[in-house]
Image (tube, rainbow, N blue to C red; front, top):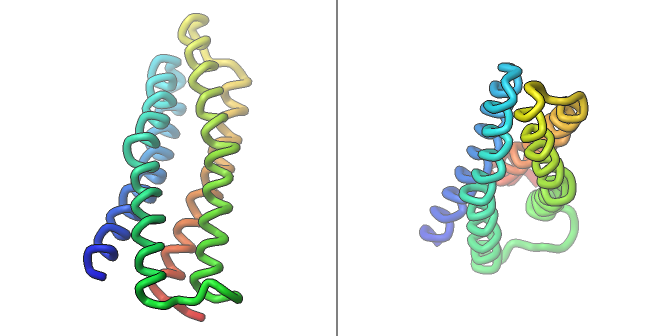
Length: 153
């Protein structure tokens, strides 16, 4: 069980660490107002998702599944595990259907901004929406982390 727990914690560190760090650097880049810096940040957020977030998610799901089966936790009824899985699914859906497409849009719009010398209002709208949905998708895993540690009910 120790190997699975280690892999699970590593997955959480990769995923949560990346989503928090990416938001920090992207918001810092947006504050510069420099289209090239904003574009590079938008592109690198996407790259970091593929390098850190996705492998983190894979580790979380695989190791969590192995530990759940090995420890005999119930996946029926409402308990800390089923609530965690539900929140995890919501966060994943936000990421897959809102954040990733929004990141692609910000990359396109910031590339246009490089050519024009400034980013458009559309970029700023997309960035604000990314921040709102990204905050939600980040707070959910932090809630899951609490549930996983406390196993409160």
